[in-house]
Amino acid sequence: MVGNKQAPGMSQYDRAEIYDPSTGEFPVVDSPMTQVRIAATAVPLNDGRVLVLGNYPGNASSAGDLSANTAEVFLP
Image 1 (cartoon, rainbow, N blue to C red):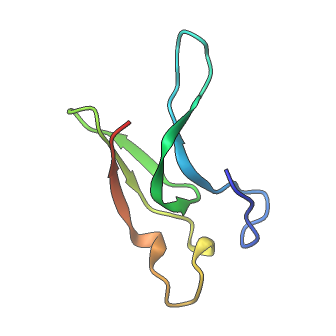
Image 2: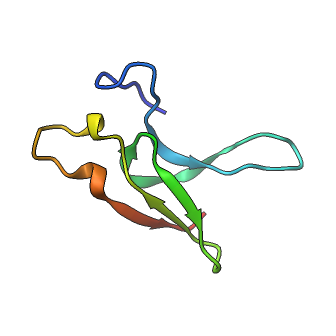
């Protein structure tokens, strides 16, 4: 997790966390995502991968930056 100047009070994440029901904790996955995201949506896929969609528009580096309109497939 990194600080966020564009949207105070919201956290940016560059790595995924996976819930471990045996410990009740969310350990951080070592492999980073392709970009830092705020308020993204994660959708589990049938093959074990996870589709990560979106980003908070305030996280864009400039007015024309479309980083809020991105998706990536993540393999935990």
